[in-house]
Image 1: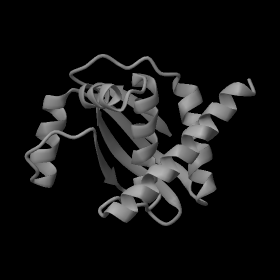
Image 2: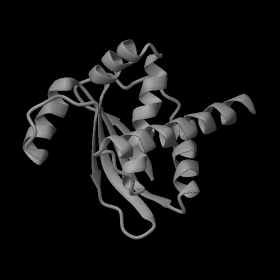
Image 3: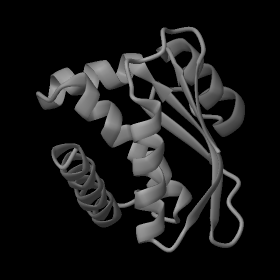
Image 4: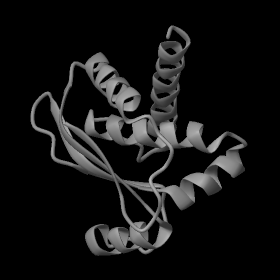
Length: 143
């Protein structure tokens, strides 16, 4: 089950069914199935609180992923700051929705076992995000 929740911010304008199908499709490309995934959209202050409380990091970020996966079943809680997503969209000169989709799938990729702690791994993560975004665009164009 994939849930989309919001706290301390409005729910972004997303198609929950379409995104859930896309998330499941991307997970299956890595031979994973979706268990329980909760996406929590929040503001910068909430994500800073989560970062300080659980990770002992004192900075804002766009996403924090808590991985509860077991075996090939991906599960977790994914916090996304819509404030930082909006800032990053402006910085990277992309739409808010495009950047939001990138961050949504970034969290799933972490649950699938991918890391981004080095420059090489970050580059690979970006490539995997791009592949997933193309998959979403293809699915939309065939409807």
